[in-house]
Image: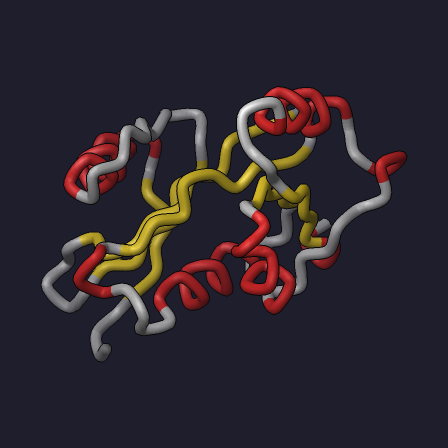
Length: 141
């Protein structure tokens, strides 16, 4: 798709991401303390979003979403490449079937000893409800 551009939303623009998630049937609510990356089409409409929540000295990737009418066009990869171009420790709780996608972007399964408590504690809580894989983007820090 031509005319696609990646941007970081300002904290005051967080409600734009929340509206995008709601339009896609998600219950996600973007917060002003998060970093929110989006892809916009040529008309300026948000067509993909990802939230990065602060967790200690690192960031936790949350709610990577591509608009239904734009899926299958490589936009999730494009948005993640934009996110990963910013130097920052980045963690991800991935569903098992998405692990190959994240691994293809350079994420790895970390050694348990390397996981900070700010990441390990919420990860353990999430794992009680669904099977997840903890991934880390090592080139980010």
